[in-house]
Length: 363
Ligand code: SF4
Image (cartoon, rainbow, N blue to C red):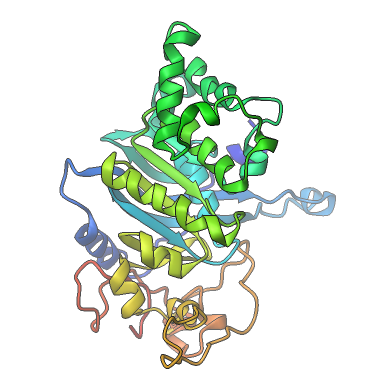
């Protein structure tokens, strides 16, 4: 394992109001038994390579705070959308849950088992339970493989079926479940003979054939034509409703999240700054960052006008996370307190629902 992934530095000092945060997070935990995935205070820090001068001077090692204290849970049959700008830590969160990256601290509990504590060998049988759908269907399929080979490959890895004739009906069933019907029409095609939407459905079928309990979808439609996006999103929606799968979807598109997800978690600079039921977050945003994201979502009704709130400045460097509230350098309503005190994730006074949380002193 590379030095980049292996280092596990001590986590930083807990945020002010940590007790409040723990209590607030407990409020949004689901009833035991329902929860499939439980992520608690997850941190993934990447060490920054030192130059010769810093090495000689023994300068302290610095870290990219890619994921910095993320907590949420996901029930079977539920879709949660992780929303935020590029570089906010969404993909690192997914990679850590999947075990591609070792967390610096925190836990990922899948169906009651803490998978962060498992060895690679212990993790192998569980890999079938968690499947990833990637952003780019043009990259995720091997151009030399026919559709049947692409879907058969994970079955071979996990030892499903003793012969090709035994696996073939399962491949056809996965294709049909992914909406590629009749399966015979697609099973012998190569990726270049498929549209972008059909390729993404083949990638989804290659996951479905393993009967996963959890799908991690990393911007699953952002590379597709607008005309086929709704179909792929409707497919994911039907999988969680009909097949009881839990889906954690990354998107930077709040309108997609609002339409398909049950709950939304808004990330900024490695941390969730607002979370709650999708309708509550979209209709009654509490955090200034969420308000800014929503202000630029086009409205269906032309009479429903909001002034786009353009945030000034760039997202701060995740190596030098600002003191206090990490959003304060860009926040239009920041006060002195915001520059020194890190706000805990808690239920804002104005929020109607107990499971609607925001990390803002003024919410
Ligand atoms: Fe803005 Fe302060 Fe709220 Fe942070 S705590 S979002 S800086 S008002």
